[in-house]
Length: 219
Image (cartoon, rainbow, N blue to C red; front, top):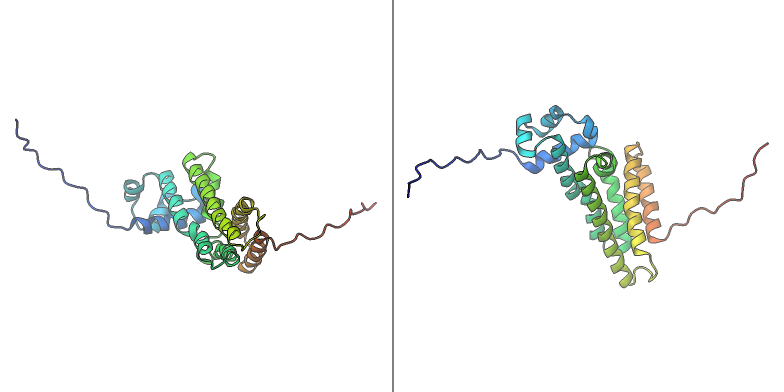
């Protein structure tokens, strides 16, 4: 047997930055500037890294965006569902869900709206990996909300004929609509008012305004 006298290969230098913190910084840039508007220079400055370090750790801009979107779904994007889970009863849970959206979407902590609804959705058609994340996030979110609403039905908090799946889907749809309104410039007070209306709608307490009779055309 021939003795292998080659020297062991040296390991690469360990990363000297926190990956999650770097991704959180990238989220802020993508959220404010959009995918196309975020250039590597602004991303590097926000993340506190050089361009080569970004490429080495995360790949190109598209791959970094994919990492950032996934990170967002696990952090800011999950806050409303976590608030929903913490509600002591179904009414407070639904209210907490929509009120938490105001905190994450109103711009008081950074960009307005939602990274998924306002940025990632625009890229879904041309980026299958982003479309997959969005689809799974919506599906998992609706299933999670429906499970809690179903528990509330079985516990007697909601009526037996409460449309669990439709209302869970409504919560997801209203979440997206709230993000678009926030991105369009709606203020905190307006968003809070909508949050209360949305909660009442989901719980079945909201009634649409009575329809008025047909209006005669002015001649």
